[in-house]
Length: 388
View 1 (tube, rainbow, N blue to C red):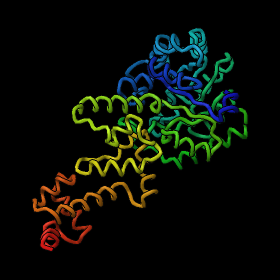
View 2 (cartoon, rainbow, N blue to C red):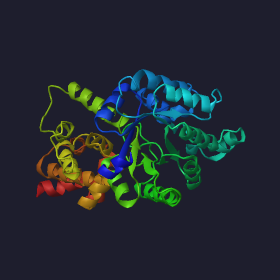
View 3 (spheres, one colour):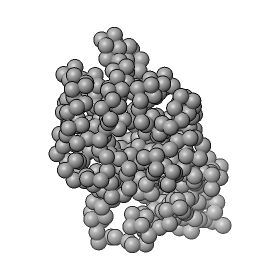
View 4 (tube, rainbow, N blue to C red):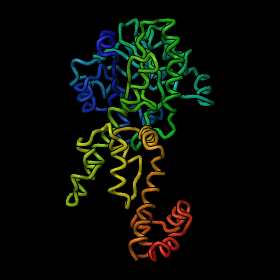
């Protein structure tokens, strides 16, 4: 892993919930794979947080996933076991030996208590379900010469894992945003940078050789990670939904939609071009502008455009505003109102029909937006301009 960092500048870990994901993540260059119960729930169409509920035994799920789907087809990439250390049905040291005997190269502490806070966290710790048990699991795994990745969210957790001999300290920044099932309240990329550097400062002080990575959260695109790499001492990225859920959502949704719309399929449609890879993915703003130009009369959601462009809605929104000087919503409204003005000045159709023609199903809303920008109601504007 250190050699990969020296050669490529960073390493990548992919949390896989199926053999197919694992196979193609490995082919794409993932340096290691993580078998997590969250991954199995993702491919079931559920949130990763499902692994925190009593739907099933997390360690049993991971053992079955790893031994039946991942290890039989993955030969050259290490597979790590997502160990739920608080499982009352296991003796950690003995279970670690079973993990090793089954061919796993290491462990990662997941589900981790570090993602739980507040009153529930306090109640769990009173019962002896502490983060210290995860630290002890990593200590024992290190003793058994297993590769160890430690999810942490605070400096104190990082210190404990460093003392236990963890090979990788990974700052877990929360569930991945983006796509249909993504986290809706993810922290900002700036906040992610601050948290990351705060924790990594301890790593560099106590063990400069430990590998430093982050897990997902707001960083769901290569552009996000470029920012993190440039502004922190991060050496790698671990993603779950990034490599599994979001690409699957995009591909399945768009492929089905394309078949459904067959017959009215327009190869020049900017959405179709983006799906087929015939649009320069760096020209996100031009893509959005062109799509609005061609589809202003229909419902347009920034999230749908971001999904097809494979970037987060927040990133697309910020980039559009930076390049255009106004927000996506303001641009869309302005474009529609200008189209409405053209129709009002050059046709004699009703104002309600014009509202629908420019993408407003609600005439009252159209009237409010039109007057806000022109100072006139659609009817007043028509009478003045059309007579002229």
